Image 1 (cartoon, helix red, strand yellow):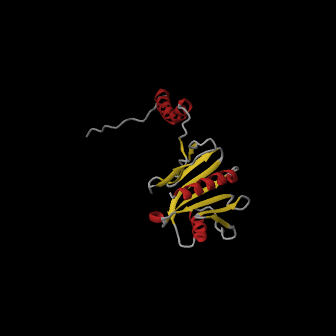
Image 2 (cartoon, one colour):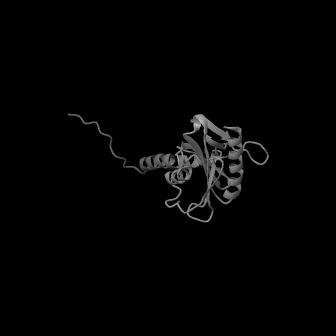
Image 3 (cartoon, helix red, strand yellow):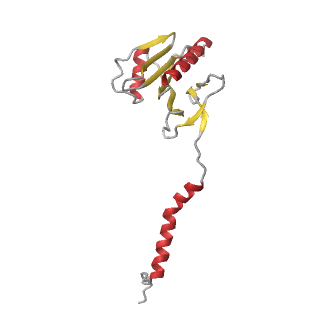
Length: 182
């Protein structure tokens, strides 16, 4: 009975061919990385959620929509990196006790285990919790909806070196949205 079997390489030339083939396969991604352009997705920062039909672009000091680098590592949330500051936003369910809603939302987003001691302030339906020196290290803002949106709230979480300034800007924008009745 005949046997058809590939004989193992015995000559140095055959070994070099196999070794070269696998070396090229392993080096190919590194070579492609060197020649490929650095692509970082940028988009307009959205407060709220477009999929929940409640969103607005973040407006900067020049009255234009602010564009930042998308944080693609966080697939399930809207998150951007704006010069070292992380802005995350979404629409969450609003509870009947608004102070508790903002603290629970922060705990749910994994920002802090013990947020209870941080004071929550508000103007109208816009709530703010700030702790720039604590374990949370940033700001949380919520705009509670009215009418058809009374069971929802826009949640914005800001972390980074300019969190106070961004928090003030977003707080003012959320107050303007409330005045407009959005």
